[in-house]
Image 1 (cartoon, rainbow, N blue to C red):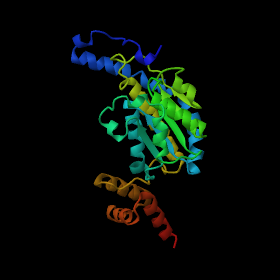
Image 2: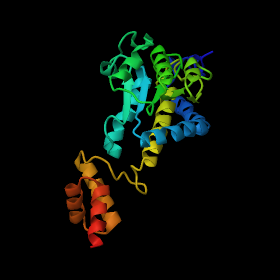
Image 3: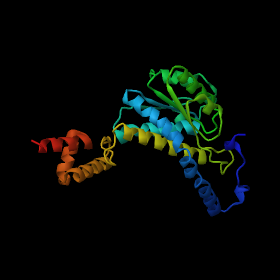
Image 4: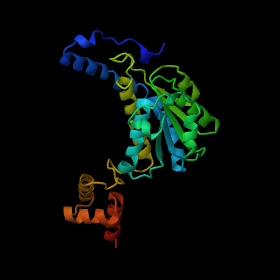
Length: 271
């Protein structure tokens, strides 16, 4: 039986008061983080395999449908501005293509051949990693994609919320975060989606740290895409060097990143 399709522990939701609905949803949400914590060994095992591959030039692909696909795209799209990495280091693919990010594309997830075709548009290397994301663990688009990737020698993992699913059986490094029935029966955008988001955060953040994209606890390679980030970067440089705000901002804008600005400052100081 799919845990993600189990009946909600609650009933007659339409008769509940708003506060009761919110409290009950929150009580269910509290079950997610402990479930994720229990899977840290599995998450760690996958990350330990991803890092050396990416250090050699490999990339990370996420493939999913619906909510799962959108979560992968969200995580992938945040890596360049946060860590200053190229847009093709972490790639999120969704069944139905970019149009499906905003609006569901009928039957797109039912084609087991399409995910590999989508990956092929970027080319592939045995150093690449493909992580399939599917709460149910039964999505044909995702299963077909990881199977073909594995056959070609790519590293494969998955994030799912059902135990012993076909998806888990198809990959080398399964992560199964079983969070129990959803508050609204079968609505896996809720606890399952939250669990997937937490795991994706853990994977990409840890990978980027181990790839050297964080110094201390700072995003020293972040893109300076708005005034808030320029201000944040300026204050990072002030903290690292002791210079004034004006000098720090000039260094940042001249050298393009916190890392480059601080490196220049200390290099000049050695002269």
